Every structure is written in C-alpha cells, then in structure tokens.
Length: 74
Image (tube, rainbow, N blue to C red; front, side, top):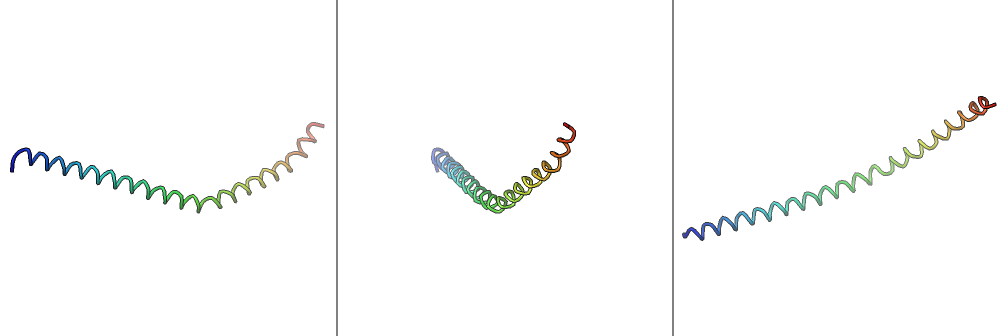
C-alpha cells in the first residue's frame, strides 16, 4: 500500500467520522426539541391555572385593601 493510499484512507475515515458526529448531533437536537414540546404541553395547563389563581388572589387582596385605604384617606 502506498503512502498516498494510506493518507487518503485516513482522510476518508476522518471525514466519515465527522459526518457521523454531525448527524448524531442533529438527531440529538431534534430529540431535545421533541422533548421540550412535550414538556411545554404538559406544563401549559398548570401555568394557566396558576395565573388564574394569582389573578383571583390579587383581586381579593385589592378588595380587602381598598376599604382600608379609603378610610385612611378620609
């Protein structure tokens, strides 16, 4: 085997390894995107419910504080 053949063979193997690494990286990123979307779908209803509860709590606090503030202003 000539030195040029060995160098070309090594170069081809390195190129194939690089392509495989990039391919695996792309598959990994796609898998993470699928997982992120799945988690977002599971968490979204809980976040909406928490927002509604916070709005109710803020409204209740406002209703409780406003009469006190009105008395203080008078």
